[in-house]
Image (tube, one colour):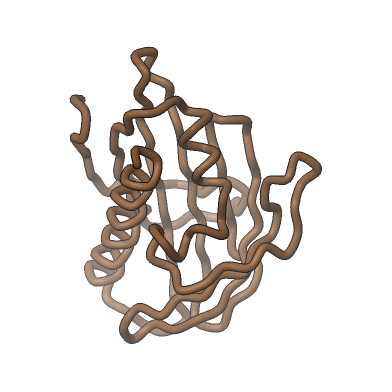
Length: 165
């Protein structure tokens, strides 16, 4: 995959980490960023800047780990018909991976995400974003997956632009 190329696909998932129950599908997309894995993860961990590039309206860090990375965060979204403030809990795995799970919400029933960051050894990193969202309101599967894809693509494009600026 060359610089700037993205691959996108729906990945069948039998279990999103930490939930222990089957889910239908998750959305996954990847992008190559012209930076080290450490630099990419530094931007991912800076949740205060998410309203500038990640498609969320506001963030508020509620708790941090001893290394300063966010542990629990409240986010606010306002995307057309979906408006919600929700809380998610993070699990950091060095500069290679971060997972998050929904802990509280009104509109979202479930939210599980992962950024995987792979240093390509040439000064670039491949970033893969996996996301599974479930709403408390009924929504057709294809529409839900299109919304997930829009969230993932917005975040990856924004992350690339933010890191490479």
